[in-house]
Structures are given as structure tokens and as C-alpha cells.
Length: 150
Image 1 (tube, rainbow, N blue to C red):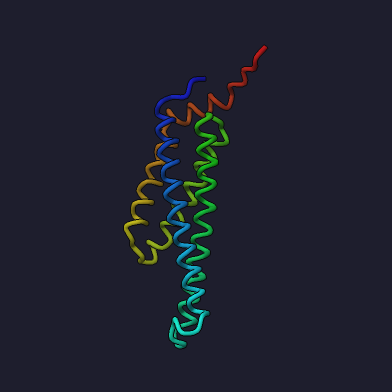
Image 2 (image 1 turned 30 degrees about the vertical axis):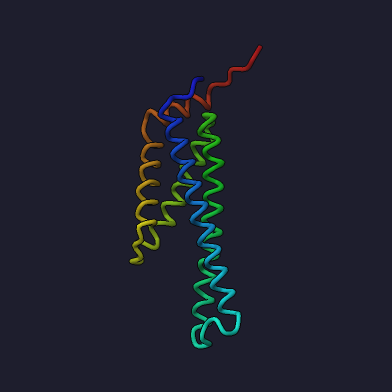
């Protein structure tokens, strides 16, 4: 089965989004680790604020690490989308839903950043597009196509 252009565009868009998400998450993790190390080193942070800076650093580290895992799973789903595998569609839906949830939780708590808003818009658009009948039909047809060479 020939891959529709629309699926190629979607896979490339998710690939670009996953790469940016990975880079941003890596920076979150690195900054969090840096803050934690500064909090534990004498002379960098005033003793009254060490616990808070260390907690923020730990949180940043774990948020970054989890974001990197989500980005890697997104990259795996791109492979499935590109090859028109049914598992690629399902994996993309699951990982984009998790990524959207990870963006919405801070926004519900009142933390609004440009990064969160942009990622939320893209994740929502990708999910909406994956749910269109044309895309779903492509992946249901691809998963039932079991033609083998004779």
C-alpha cells in the first residue's frame, strides 16, 4: 500500500515536534540538575534557600527526564506511522494524549508559558488529525493488508 501524502506530512510534523520536545526536556533536566548541584555546594546559594532550590532542581530534573521518555516514544510512533503500521497509530494516539495531559496539568494550575501553549496546540492538532476518518481508514486498511510475496 502506498503511503498517502497526508500521513507523510503528519509523521514529519510529529517527528519535528518530538525532536523539539526532546531538546527542551533535556534542557529542563540539565537546568534542574544544575540547580540541585548549586544547592548542595557551599557558597552558591544562601543556606536559607537551599532546600527550595534543591526541590525545584529535583522537580526540573524529573520533569525533563519524563519529557525525554515521552519524546523517544513519540519518535517510535513516527516510525510506525511512516510504515503505516496499526501499532504506530495507536502509539501516536497514546503518547500524544499523555503529552497533552502533561501540558494541561500545569496550565490548569495557573502556569501559562509560551512553550506549554505551543505544545498544547500542536498536540491537540495532531490528535485531532489522527482521529479523522481518512487517517483512521488508512491505518485500519494498512493493518489488515497482509499481502505476502508468493
